[in-house]
Amino acid sequence: MKILITGSNGMLGKALSRQLLNKHEIIGLDNGKTQDLGAKARKFIHCDITDREKTISEIVSNRPDVIIHAAAYADVDGCERNAGLAQKVNAQGTENVALAAKDCGSFLCYISTDFVFDGNKDKGYAEEDKPNPINIYGRSKLEGEKRVQSELEKFAIIRSSWLFGPGGKNFVDTFLQKAQGKKKIEVVDDQFGSPTYTKDLALGIDKLMVLGDSSKGIYHITNSGTCSWFEFAVTIKAMAALDVEVLPVSSEQYDSPTKRPKMSVLENKRFCKSTGITLRHWKEALKEHLDERENFS
Ligand SMILES: NC(=O)c1ccc[n+]([C@@H]2O[C@H](COP(=O)([O-])OP(=O)(O)OC[C@H]3O[C@@H](n4cnc5c(N)ncnc54)[C@H](OP(=O)(O)O)[C@@H]3O)[C@@H](O)[C@H]2O)c1
Image 1: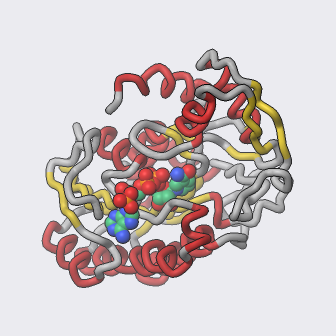
Image 2 (image 1 turned 90 degrees about the vertical axis):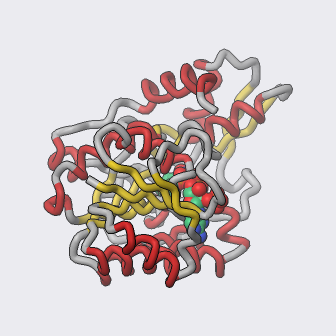
């Protein structure tokens, strides 16, 4: 198959191209001027998805069978400061990609987020639970979901959470950097989720794509197991043998410009039923990431 990945220079985009490269023809598309190290697309298109005309003409001229739309303004605090850009990239940009998919009859796989939910549930969210985002990023990503649903028949919306992996900004790397030379670090203990390794999410997306058009609909795909950010940090500290004290704090005590959902756990039932796969526990994935991160540029 010919698969076009938007956001191919990003953390998930790179993992996707590495996962799919050997089986498919991969075309990368990103607003970066050139293809990043670690992104392995056979062909690279420099394109800003907010430019409707260019996005549609570039995608249509390549006629991909599948588009995996991972490009996003994914800086949650940045979205809060710049709501216009969040809407432009995550909602209008997604609509542009959806229009291109419609034009060339491609199956569109849109990557979305746990942040479409308000986090008020006391257990994990199922695909059919009603979204109710509480911040700008979540609202703009939900708007992206709606535009995909209204433009297309052939689509999958894949929500994931707490991504970590090589080649992008993520909690694991930020924590390791912050821990350098510090005696104590405060980490929020009342927000819960499932840390998800981009390599495993890419594998899950690959398995879902094998089902073709019958994979239509909304899926939650995360690594197994849940934790708070504090528990995640304590585990990173132990695995990386860091000499730093990790202190639990509440969301109220932690100074953040953005309201975040307290419950971000996503039940993976529909994905497991459709593919027969359960992604491994996040701790196992974290161990692999820490072992391999030194080898990645
Ligand atoms: N990170 C998480 O914890 C998380 C959790 C759940 C879901 N997601 C979703 O997963 C997807 C991938 O996230 P990620 O963490 O891999 O993000 P990322 O590393 O920021 O990758 C996104 C890529 O999209 C590019 N991009 C941004 N605006 C663009 C535009 N207007 N036109 C073309 N390309 C553009 C970015 O380029 P620049 O860097 O140059 O802007 C970047 O290369 C996103 O859809 C995100 O919403 C992420």
